[in-house]
Length: 64
Image (cartoon, rainbow, N blue to C red; front, side, top):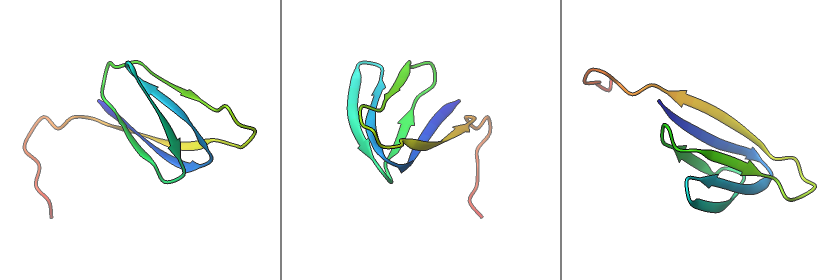
């Protein structure tokens, strides 16, 4: 299952595996399954993000 994070407001740092990156509002982050991840908010601002978990398809999918 993949996990996607969408930053709604604020800024911070996301660490996925061995990589760290600064993120801001409207960033979309893909976090592959079974890879450790961590979020850091090093400011006084609110950091708010939406988490979406998506199962991998087991059959071929079609767009309508």
